[in-house]
Length: 130
Image 1 (cartoon, rainbow, N blue to C red):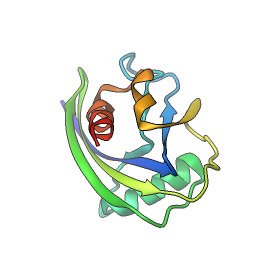
Image 2: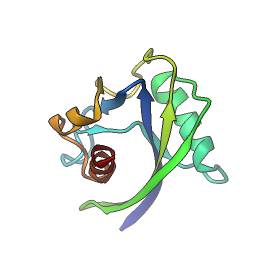
Image 3: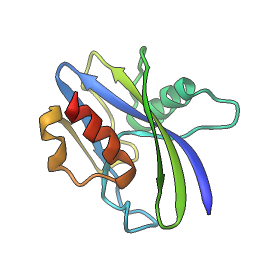
Image 4: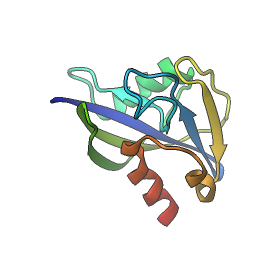
């Protein structure tokens, strides 16, 4: 089974968190699910470098702060994912969606209203508990 290492950004602005929705995907179980933006860690790249690069690619968003949050290991039917999440406070909600089909800024109490990708659920649960 393929194993991938990725990073995810929990982007915060004031008391809201950015949630982005995937478009159609190769696998139905992640198609159109909400997730925290991010992507694969390239060889030789730190988690902080990867999240900075991915947010520029996916959202045209520059970040100046990253704070390690937690790591989740999740096995989907076709691959295993190790996802490192970072808290990324920003000063603006201005983003450009280049890979996702929708974005929502929600308070942590509203996060469970969305249909999340399974690997992202532990992040949502921890955010709601804090």
